[in-house]
Each structure stands twice: as C-alpha cells, then as structure tokens.
Image 1 (cartoon, rainbow, N blue to C red):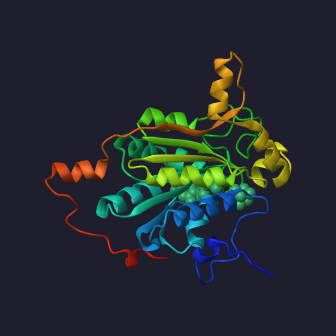
Image 2 (cartoon, rainbow, N blue to C red):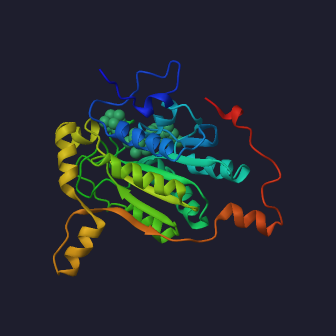
Length: 286
Ligand SMILES: Cc1ncc(C[n+]2csc(CCOP(=O)(O)OP(=O)(O)O)c2C)c(N)n1
Ligand code: SF4
C-alpha cells in the first residue's frame, strides 16, 4: 500500500512536548498545520524561521514544532519579535497569538508594530475568548455573548482585528478560517512573502469554553456554523455591487500595499545595511 507522507510530521519537535494540550475539536491544530505547510512549501530554512508566542492555548503552538522558538510572557510576543527582527533582519519572524494575547494585553504592541511596518508576520488565532484560563471575555468576544466574566452577556463592542490593523498602518491584512485549510495556508504564505507587517486573522473555534458559555455545540457543529458564517471578500463585493446586503464575515486578502519597512529604513538612515551585531539562534531554542 502506498503511504502519503505528511510534511508537517517532519517539523514536530522531538522530545517530551506531547501529548499536546488542545481539546478535541479545537481549530488550533488545523491552523498550526497550515502555518507549517506554508513554511514548508516556501522552502524556508527552518533555522532561519523563528516562531514567537505569548501565553494561551494558541501560544503553545511553537512548543510543538522544531524551529527556533520563543515562548514568552502573555501579550509580549510582538515586542520580542521586534527585537529578534531588528537584531537579524534575515530571519522570518512569525508571531503566534490568541485574541487575548494579541489584542488585549498585547494590543499596544500590535498597533505600534503595524504602524512601524516592521517585517514580522502575526497570526492571531481568534476564538473569541480566553481559552486557556477558562473563558474570560476578550476584545473580540461578540457583544451579547457569554463568558465567565460576562454572566449577563458581554456589554462591550467587539474589535474588528483587521480594521484595527488597517487603521494602525499594517501593509498586509488577511482574514481566514480553518474551514478551508488550503486557502488559510495560501494566506499565511502570502503574509510571509510580503515585506512589512502582516496580519492573518484566523476565525477559530473553541468547542470547550466558548461553547460551554454560549451553548454553541461540539467541534463539528461549531465548524459547520463557522463555514456558514463566512463569505469570500470578492463574492461579498459582487453582491454589494448588485445592491444586495452582505451579513456574513468576509474572508480573503483585505489589504496589501508596499511601504518602506522599519528595520531596513532604520539601518539605511544610520548608514548601515544591517545591524552591527547578529543574533545567535542556537541560544534561543527551547
Ligand atoms: C501577565 C499575565 N496575565 C494573565 C495571564 C493569564 N493568562 C494566560 S493565557 C490568558 C488568555 C489566553 O487567551 P488567548 O490569548 O485569547 O488565547 P487562547 O487560550 O484562547 O488560545 C491569560 C489571561 C498570564 N499568564 N500573564
Ligand atoms: S480551551 Fe478552547 S482554545 Fe483552548 S485548547 Fe480547548 S478548545 Fe482550544
């Protein structure tokens, strides 16, 4: 019998990191595999790829894959990523984040990295809640949804992460979903090849705590509902042009532009092509 080898397996970190912590039905695994496939298909040297995360269920991802990794403090992944990229611009720097990690405690780092247009790639696994700590509401929890800290329904309006990134100056913005993993992979690959700050917001499901508070059903049910709630941005545009109302979440590449990149500009102004020091990655490994 012919066996098909999954390239993702070659990237799993040897040692005692498994079993992983993700619940059955959680979409974080699909998103993680899409990131690895994107890196693999781009043919990047894994010693020149750095995965950096904060704390959370999503943020566990770099622990499972054998790259140069930094598993940092909650909300600070983008700050660490900024330092890594500035120290060695040849590296591909990918930030793995939850919506709490990236948009609540880490929100300030997020907007300023976007404003600077530093060439880092931020992937936010947006499951609408704090998963790891048992279901507190986050800045992306929909108004009216329930959470451990919103027993009467969330009073706060929801952040649109892509609009936030656009307002802050990000030069590549995509919204994607694990319901189409090939498309997700291609959005991540395009973000990585883009020179400048990129955001891929991944609409995600948390069949454990989000579902517990919102009675959203199990993984397959949430997955199906997610699939029914999204529409490709091109289709939405065509419908609007015909005067029709679009009440679904638009996925696709929402914005892409060329603008001077922060680290390159910084060193060229200083009369240097590259920083005067370089970061030795072997010291960064977990
Ligand atoms: C400074 C600090 N504050 C709070 C926490 C507790 N904490 C750990 S993960 C987390 C939220 C995780 O939610 P999110 O980033 O959305 O990721 P998810 O677990 O949903 O994937 C919080 C509040 C912490 N570890 N450090
Ligand atoms: S708590 Fe939610 S986000 Fe965390 S692993 Fe479980 S399903 Fe995924």
